[in-house]
Length: 271
Image (cartoon, rainbow, N blue to C red):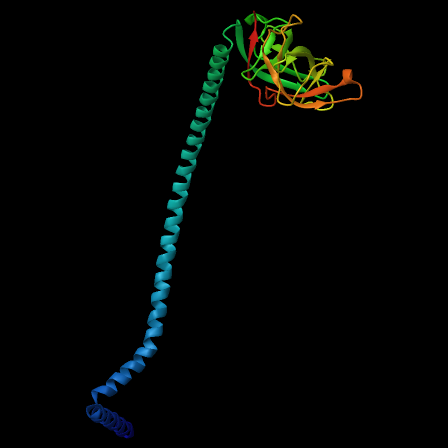
Protein backbone atom coordinates (compact mmCIF):
# COMPACT_ATOMS: atom_id res chain seq x y z
CA UNK A 1 0.00 0.00 0.00
CA UNK A 2 2.87 2.32 0.83
CA UNK A 3 4.43 1.57 -2.57
CA UNK A 4 1.22 2.45 -4.39
CA UNK A 5 1.00 5.75 -2.52
CA UNK A 6 4.62 6.57 -3.43
CA UNK A 7 4.01 5.78 -7.08
CA UNK A 8 0.98 8.01 -7.11
CA UNK A 9 2.92 10.91 -5.63
CA UNK A 10 5.63 10.57 -8.33
CA UNK A 11 2.95 10.55 -11.02
CA UNK A 12 1.41 13.69 -9.58
CA UNK A 13 4.81 15.43 -9.53
CA UNK A 14 5.54 14.49 -13.17
CA UNK A 15 2.09 15.71 -14.19
CA UNK A 16 2.67 19.02 -12.42
CA UNK A 17 6.10 19.44 -14.18
CA UNK A 18 4.51 18.77 -17.54
CA UNK A 19 1.75 21.28 -16.87
CA UNK A 20 4.21 23.93 -15.74
CA UNK A 21 6.33 23.33 -18.90
CA UNK A 22 3.23 23.69 -21.10
CA UNK A 23 2.28 26.95 -19.37
CA UNK A 24 5.80 28.36 -19.77
CA UNK A 25 6.01 27.41 -23.42
CA UNK A 26 2.59 28.83 -24.12
CA UNK A 27 3.63 32.17 -22.63
CA UNK A 28 6.96 32.35 -24.57
CA UNK A 29 7.33 34.59 -27.64
CA UNK A 30 8.53 33.32 -31.00
CA UNK A 31 11.70 35.41 -30.61
CA UNK A 32 12.59 33.39 -27.51
CA UNK A 33 12.47 30.22 -29.56
CA UNK A 34 14.88 31.76 -32.01
CA UNK A 35 17.30 32.45 -29.15
CA UNK A 36 17.01 28.87 -27.98
CA UNK A 37 17.43 27.66 -31.54
CA UNK A 38 20.47 29.86 -31.91
CA UNK A 39 21.97 28.47 -28.73
CA UNK A 40 21.30 24.93 -29.88
CA UNK A 41 22.64 25.79 -33.33
CA UNK A 42 25.84 27.21 -31.83
CA UNK A 43 26.30 23.93 -30.05
CA UNK A 44 25.32 21.63 -32.87
CA UNK A 45 27.05 23.41 -35.79
CA UNK A 46 30.67 22.85 -34.68
CA UNK A 47 29.92 19.19 -34.23
CA UNK A 48 28.26 19.05 -37.63
CA UNK A 49 31.15 20.94 -39.25
CA UNK A 50 33.63 18.58 -37.68
CA UNK A 51 31.78 15.56 -39.00
CA UNK A 52 31.55 17.16 -42.46
CA UNK A 53 35.32 17.96 -42.44
CA UNK A 54 36.21 14.39 -41.52
CA UNK A 55 33.90 13.09 -44.24
CA UNK A 56 35.43 15.40 -46.85
CA UNK A 57 38.93 14.51 -45.70
CA UNK A 58 38.26 10.83 -46.14
CA UNK A 59 36.72 11.46 -49.57
CA UNK A 60 39.68 13.70 -50.49
CA UNK A 61 42.18 10.99 -49.53
CA UNK A 62 40.35 8.50 -51.69
CA UNK A 63 40.53 10.95 -54.61
CA UNK A 64 44.21 11.64 -53.84
CA UNK A 65 45.16 7.96 -53.97
CA UNK A 66 43.09 7.55 -57.11
CA UNK A 67 44.93 10.51 -58.71
CA UNK A 68 48.29 9.06 -57.65
CA UNK A 69 47.56 5.80 -59.43
CA UNK A 70 46.53 7.73 -62.56
CA UNK A 71 49.66 9.90 -62.42
CA UNK A 72 51.91 6.85 -62.10
CA UNK A 73 50.35 5.32 -65.18
CA UNK A 74 50.63 8.59 -67.12
CA UNK A 75 54.26 8.96 -65.99
CA UNK A 76 55.07 5.47 -67.25
CA UNK A 77 53.47 6.28 -70.60
CA UNK A 78 55.37 9.59 -70.84
CA UNK A 79 58.67 7.85 -70.07
CA UNK A 80 58.06 5.35 -72.86
CA UNK A 81 57.19 8.15 -75.30
CA UNK A 82 60.25 10.13 -74.19
CA UNK A 83 62.47 7.11 -74.82
CA UNK A 84 60.99 6.72 -78.30
CA UNK A 85 61.51 10.43 -79.02
CA UNK A 86 65.14 10.27 -77.84
CA UNK A 87 65.75 7.30 -80.13
CA UNK A 88 64.18 9.16 -83.06
CA UNK A 89 66.25 12.24 -82.24
CA UNK A 90 69.48 10.22 -82.26
CA UNK A 91 68.55 8.71 -85.61
CA UNK A 92 67.83 12.19 -87.00
CA UNK A 93 71.17 13.46 -85.69
CA UNK A 94 72.97 10.59 -87.41
CA UNK A 95 71.14 11.31 -90.66
CA UNK A 96 71.90 15.03 -90.30
CA UNK A 97 75.58 14.30 -89.68
CA UNK A 98 75.74 12.01 -92.70
CA UNK A 99 74.02 14.62 -94.85
CA UNK A 100 76.41 17.33 -93.68
CA UNK A 101 79.37 15.05 -94.43
CA UNK A 102 78.04 14.34 -97.92
CA UNK A 103 77.44 18.06 -98.42
CA UNK A 104 81.03 18.81 -97.40
CA UNK A 105 82.28 16.15 -99.82
CA UNK A 106 80.27 17.70 -102.66
CA UNK A 107 81.43 21.23 -101.80
CA UNK A 108 85.05 20.11 -101.63
CA UNK A 109 84.94 18.29 -104.94
CA UNK A 110 83.21 21.26 -106.58
CA UNK A 111 85.85 23.63 -105.19
CA UNK A 112 88.83 21.56 -106.28
CA UNK A 113 87.64 20.35 -109.67
CA UNK A 114 91.11 20.76 -111.14
CA UNK A 115 92.37 17.85 -109.01
CA UNK A 116 91.53 14.16 -108.95
CA UNK A 117 90.56 13.56 -105.34
CA UNK A 118 89.17 10.95 -102.96
CA UNK A 119 87.05 12.07 -99.99
CA UNK A 120 87.59 10.81 -96.46
CA UNK A 121 86.94 11.79 -92.89
CA UNK A 122 89.04 11.93 -89.75
CA UNK A 123 88.72 8.89 -87.45
CA UNK A 124 91.58 9.57 -85.04
CA UNK A 125 93.96 12.31 -83.92
CA UNK A 126 97.39 12.05 -82.33
CA UNK A 127 98.61 15.45 -81.18
CA UNK A 128 101.44 16.64 -78.94
CA UNK A 129 104.02 19.45 -78.87
CA UNK A 130 106.17 17.60 -81.42
CA UNK A 131 103.65 15.62 -83.40
CA UNK A 132 100.33 16.37 -85.05
CA UNK A 133 99.04 13.34 -86.94
CA UNK A 134 95.50 12.49 -88.00
CA UNK A 135 94.13 9.19 -89.29
CA UNK A 136 91.55 9.10 -92.08
CA UNK A 137 89.19 6.30 -93.12
CA UNK A 138 90.58 5.65 -96.60
CA UNK A 139 93.73 3.74 -97.50
CA UNK A 140 95.55 1.64 -100.05
CA UNK A 141 92.38 -0.12 -101.23
CA UNK A 142 90.97 3.28 -102.15
CA UNK A 143 94.06 4.27 -104.14
CA UNK A 144 95.80 6.25 -101.39
CA UNK A 145 99.58 6.19 -101.09
CA UNK A 146 102.27 7.99 -99.08
CA UNK A 147 103.18 11.49 -100.26
CA UNK A 148 99.70 12.49 -101.45
CA UNK A 149 98.53 16.00 -100.39
CA UNK A 150 95.48 16.32 -98.14
CA UNK A 151 93.20 19.37 -98.24
CA UNK A 152 90.03 20.63 -96.57
CA UNK A 153 87.46 23.21 -97.58
CA UNK A 154 89.50 26.04 -96.02
CA UNK A 155 92.88 24.98 -97.40
CA UNK A 156 95.89 22.74 -96.89
CA UNK A 157 95.86 20.03 -94.19
CA UNK A 158 99.12 18.16 -94.82
CA UNK A 159 100.20 15.00 -96.63
CA UNK A 160 99.91 11.23 -96.27
CA UNK A 161 102.92 9.62 -94.58
CA UNK A 162 101.76 5.98 -94.35
CA UNK A 163 98.83 3.77 -95.33
CA UNK A 164 97.12 0.50 -94.46
CA UNK A 165 94.49 -1.22 -96.54
CA UNK A 166 91.69 0.93 -95.18
CA UNK A 167 93.31 3.89 -93.38
CA UNK A 168 95.99 6.53 -93.87
CA UNK A 169 98.11 8.64 -91.52
CA UNK A 170 98.38 12.31 -92.39
CA UNK A 171 101.11 14.61 -91.10
CA UNK A 172 99.43 17.99 -90.67
CA UNK A 173 100.99 21.41 -91.13
CA UNK A 174 101.07 21.80 -87.33
CA UNK A 175 103.53 18.93 -86.97
CA UNK A 176 106.96 20.13 -85.82
CA UNK A 177 108.73 18.21 -88.59
CA UNK A 178 106.54 19.48 -91.44
CA UNK A 179 107.88 21.98 -94.01
CA UNK A 180 106.02 23.54 -96.94
CA UNK A 181 107.47 25.77 -99.64
CA UNK A 182 105.17 28.80 -99.72
CA UNK A 183 104.67 32.33 -100.99
CA UNK A 184 103.34 35.37 -99.10
CA UNK A 185 101.27 38.35 -100.17
CA UNK A 186 100.88 39.94 -103.56
CA UNK A 187 104.64 40.21 -103.95
CA UNK A 188 104.83 36.39 -103.78
CA UNK A 189 107.82 36.43 -101.46
CA UNK A 190 109.07 32.91 -100.78
CA UNK A 191 109.03 31.44 -97.25
CA UNK A 192 109.18 27.99 -95.72
CA UNK A 193 106.22 27.25 -93.44
CA UNK A 194 106.83 24.87 -90.53
CA UNK A 195 105.14 23.66 -87.37
CA UNK A 196 105.75 25.86 -84.34
CA UNK A 197 107.04 24.32 -81.10
CA UNK A 198 106.42 27.51 -79.11
CA UNK A 199 102.78 27.82 -80.18
CA UNK A 200 101.26 24.69 -81.67
CA UNK A 201 98.17 26.59 -82.84
CA UNK A 202 100.27 28.78 -85.14
CA UNK A 203 102.60 28.07 -88.06
CA UNK A 204 106.03 29.62 -88.43
CA UNK A 205 107.35 31.13 -91.66
CA UNK A 206 111.15 31.26 -92.01
CA UNK A 207 113.88 31.80 -94.59
CA UNK A 208 112.33 35.14 -95.53
CA UNK A 209 114.28 37.12 -98.17
CA UNK A 210 115.92 40.23 -96.73
CA UNK A 211 114.24 42.36 -99.37
CA UNK A 212 110.75 41.07 -98.62
CA UNK A 213 108.18 43.41 -97.07
CA UNK A 214 105.63 41.34 -95.16
CA UNK A 215 102.49 42.66 -93.48
CA UNK A 216 99.95 41.30 -91.06
CA UNK A 217 96.95 39.99 -92.98
CA UNK A 218 98.99 38.80 -95.97
CA UNK A 219 97.77 35.51 -97.41
CA UNK A 220 100.09 32.51 -97.41
CA UNK A 221 99.70 29.70 -99.95
CA UNK A 222 101.69 26.85 -101.46
CA UNK A 223 104.30 27.73 -104.04
CA UNK A 224 104.14 24.42 -105.94
CA UNK A 225 107.83 23.73 -105.32
CA UNK A 226 109.08 20.66 -103.50
CA UNK A 227 107.23 17.93 -105.38
CA UNK A 228 104.38 17.30 -102.90
CA UNK A 229 101.90 20.18 -102.80
CA UNK A 230 100.24 21.75 -105.85
CA UNK A 231 100.55 25.49 -106.36
CA UNK A 232 98.05 27.97 -104.94
CA UNK A 233 96.48 26.03 -102.04
CA UNK A 234 95.70 28.32 -99.10
CA UNK A 235 97.80 27.79 -95.96
CA UNK A 236 96.78 30.72 -93.76
CA UNK A 237 97.18 34.39 -92.88
CA UNK A 238 100.12 36.33 -91.43
CA UNK A 239 99.28 37.23 -87.81
CA UNK A 240 102.62 38.71 -86.75
CA UNK A 241 105.93 39.73 -88.27
CA UNK A 242 108.70 39.11 -85.74
CA UNK A 243 111.75 41.25 -86.36
CA UNK A 244 115.21 40.22 -85.06
CA UNK A 245 118.63 41.85 -84.80
CA UNK A 246 119.77 39.80 -87.73
CA UNK A 247 117.44 40.43 -90.69
CA UNK A 248 117.99 36.92 -92.02
CA UNK A 249 116.55 35.40 -88.81
CA UNK A 250 113.23 37.22 -88.79
CA UNK A 251 110.09 35.13 -89.11
CA UNK A 252 106.34 35.34 -89.32
CA UNK A 253 103.57 33.68 -87.31
CA UNK A 254 100.75 32.32 -89.44
CA UNK A 255 97.13 31.55 -88.48
CA UNK A 256 96.23 28.30 -90.32
CA UNK A 257 93.23 28.52 -92.61
CA UNK A 258 92.09 25.07 -91.44
CA UNK A 259 90.62 24.69 -87.96
CA UNK A 260 92.41 21.47 -87.03
CA UNK A 261 90.49 21.04 -83.79
CA UNK A 262 87.20 20.78 -85.70
CA UNK A 263 88.56 19.09 -88.81
CA UNK A 264 86.33 16.20 -89.92
CA UNK A 265 86.19 15.99 -93.71
CA UNK A 266 89.18 15.97 -96.10
CA UNK A 267 90.12 15.28 -99.70
CA UNK A 268 93.22 13.39 -100.73
CA UNK A 269 94.67 14.63 -104.02
CA UNK A 270 95.65 11.56 -106.00
CA UNK A 271 96.74 13.41 -109.16
